[in-house]
Image 1: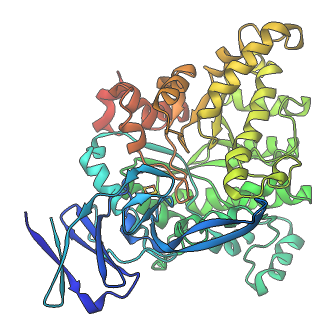
Image 2: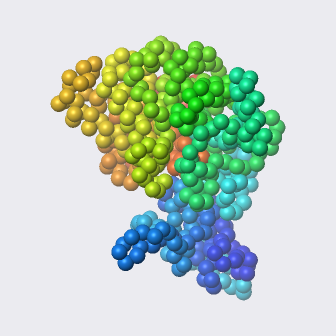
Image 3: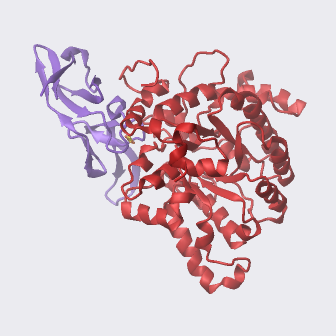
Length: 121
Length: 406
Ligand code: FES
């Protein structure tokens, strides 16, 4: 077990991340409000640099009471990271793909000490 | 890493250097020792519209060449092209930046951008050869002005042969056949056959021309005689009556990229073209492979009942399909048993060829073939490179030759 220094906590803005590397092990650490989440930047699809992707909310389709569609909307509470290689999305809080619970990222514990963010590996 | 490029690990956007973008592909290549595996990428599209103004200078008709300046605010960018909605939608609204083409700045030392981008990809993925094809021409078979197909294709072919291919022997091209004009297609073969770097000839499949029409027999005979590969490269068509009902790119792409090759392959087989041109190497490009199991069974099923409608055939349609060639990308693999059965149905060991389709949104890395648990090592090496070497007559570097003999 070891740990990697990521950044000063106040250097990472809300919905932003940093990728740190230890050899081939690459980990993305993201901030959502006051919480931090760390995921291996190794996409289960084809090994892409998922944590260097775009942060974007989950998309939903709006249906009315008669089940008629009224287009798309973003889901406020579900923030995703989209893998830049082919677009697989993962919930930044859970690491889970919205279309398949078995497709998920490997997580790591994050610790904030004295205003510094570390990830345990 | 193969060079001293330093990664930033920063957010990937439209302008990210492809060495950053593909750094993890390089890691995969190192872990699998791909530098000891002969790998040919049959289909990549590293070009973008930045080359287009230069290509316009190769148009041979002086009036059309001049007229190119009327486009793109005088820059000639996009001149005469009939792009339709679809290709521009590849990036899933910004989620897959390279899906819209590689926009990274490169140092201008006179090397064509196409070569610079191809080299980066070759190095990062661990390839030995890459066959390139332009994005811009994928629509051209549907151009409302038929002569424009000839003007643009000839300019592009000349630009490739005169300017791009001499720069790097690892970069090869299948040249565009202006198929809507059979005699111009024949002229393309006559003119460019045997030029350095020309790997074969290609028809873009998004068009409404039946491949069995009598006007094409001379073209096929020429290609067969010259031992050339004839590729059918699929593409979208969102304006066909059926596909125009599909309201999402996902639906249109899933269907349209298969539909055109499904039609052309069916015509090819049922009209007995494999019997007429038994030595012609025909290749179906970028439709994935899941459709092959369907069409092989479907045609066999109907052929047994309606043999009189396909009198030139001497064996089952699926048996002719086992003599043709298929690129693997985008390789559908969510159901491994189906994938294995499909590969078996068309003799993948000898008939399939790896393609990346880089930098399109659904590109495949060589690892998708290498990691298939049901293929033995000989089959993997064949699909990744040796099948291509055989039919494109590519030189296999010395270090791989012992394995190639297997
Ligand atoms: S590698 Fe992440 S989506 Fe393909």
